[in-house]
Amino acid sequence: MINRAIAAARAAGRNVRGQTGSNPPVGAAILDRFGNIVGVGATQQEGSAHAEVMALRAAQERAKGGTLVVTLEPCNHHGRTPPCTDAIIEAGIESVYYLVPDPNPLAAGGAKTLEEAGLNVARVHESVPELTAWLTWVRTGLPHVTLKIAQTLDGCVAAADGTSQWITSAASRAHAHRDRARRHAIIVGAGTARIDKPGLTARGWDGRELEGVQQPQRIIAGGADMGEGYRSFPTVADALRVLGQEGAYDVLVEGGPTIAASLMRENAVDAVRVYLAPYMLGNGLRSIGGEVSSTLADATRFALESSTRIGDDIVVDYVRRRSTLKNF
Image (cartoon, rainbow, N blue to C red; front, side, top):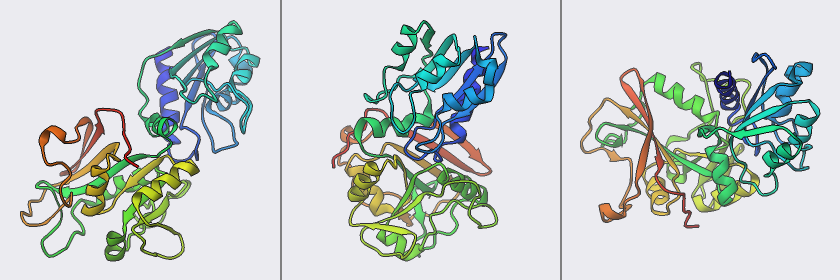
């Protein structure tokens, strides 16, 4: 029964990633006293209800005597909304299971408050990938940075004559657009902006912007002015500092080889998403422009998180093996 509730809570949080503002994408599910799922909820935008409250609203009186499962420890402070711990206690919930402790000192302590109120509280030790970006931001004050690369099998992002559209398939590009909808901001360098004039929006197969999603901020690093709808910063470091201050904690970098190499040298990459296309170009433009590490011993090490086949393409996700250390 708990496993079903955990799956429902995780799915709820996953579905709102990129749509909660600076709030974390948390999901919650409620089991009634007979083990039936009677309420599922997810955290909303800043100033709106958290996942626990949304699930309680869905369950109504059926929550009394029941069990709450939530992907993040319930908050325990008065911020834009009242403490979730108060709502849980008032609803008559008897047991609470949470997956990730809240590292925010302003909101932490929810588990202890619930225990002191007589509830059964336990942590379920499972990772929640949807919370990774938010956790990075809480701990460092800077956004979680994913470097996205679309390349050939031999590591080229463009042919020797500069042509690059399209290396990956239409299905892979659609996958990438859905990923954009889960991010707070998309960053490209000035060179990519001038040459490709990218829209940097999350679009569907028909080229229209996806409906019902919060479009990511469109960021140009390097000083290029792309006009209305874009924000320009002198450097990537400047952009990341400001985005972190604003609570935009999940950032996708789609820039070219120069910005990719710069980020790697600065230890600013938390994850890498690579779209591999079934081509070999030989003398094409490489995905990383310039030296990042002069020796293998000093190279940044990533761990394979997942790989997915999309037709003849493959999307591969890697995450840093150690804690992120930002050099700016």
